[in-house]
Length: 191
Image (tube, rainbow, N blue to C red; front, side, top):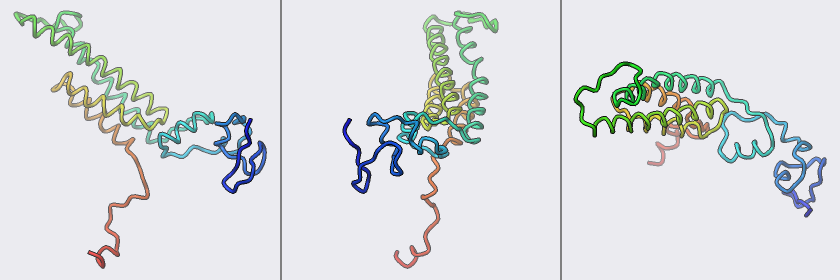
């Protein structure tokens, strides 16, 4: 195994004071690394998440993640009747006793395809719920995709569920404390 060198050019050995987490990628055991026992920060990036998984760190979702997951689960559960009604109208299922009357076959086919696609959107929303529960940063992207895709499959009926999914995605929004929306005091001196 090739030797590892720290930032100061000194050789890093397992158990030394300069033992660093990147050593795990070179074949050293992660359990001996003191950094693997550090608490996980609440605002992780995708690279931090991947590093934490490789180090075997426990996942600690923040209360904000739990509330967002609960909101997303509520939005997903409230949208379950939508594909059932679409498939019932198409004649695939008989859940609500919806009669299609003399509706043309093309419209019934569109309703059936929309029902199947809406079920896929609900599955995507459930994936977003589980990702939010795990504290994964990509949960926000998945929930936004589910909210937007739902508008494409069941436009008027999806509005309440889409708003709740969007609110949960907003709760998972990126928080960067270094960005300030206030105008700095010195900006007035330099127009």
